[in-house]
Amino acid sequence: MSVGEVKASLRAAVEAARQGRRVFDQAASDAEAATRMANAVLHGSRNEDVTAVHEALTAAEAEVEPTRRRFDNTAKHTAAYLTRLG
Picture 1 (cartoon, rainbow, N blue to C red):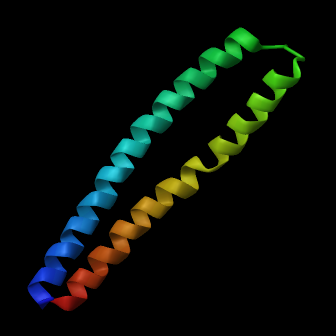
Picture 2 (cartoon, helix red, strand yellow):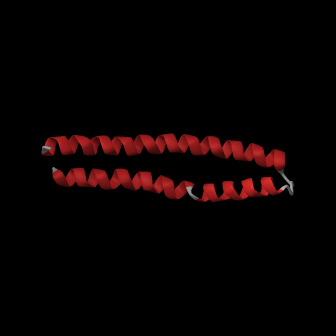
Picture 3 (cartoon, helix red, strand yellow):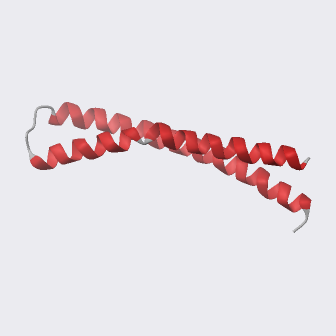
């Protein structure tokens, strides 16, 4: 693989990470809206299944920002490597 091909692959990787972040942001936004609606409907329920779902949603919500940072860091570090290649 030539340096030019490596650079092209790195550029594609940066764009894929940025696109992945955009798709993830939309999915997270949709999930947040659905969660708000579910919370409004199920508020005060003591059902075990509802409690388990609330716990799972809380755990998933805690992963949103770390996942965003992973996408951003992937793009940032890949772009930095591409810059060092010249």
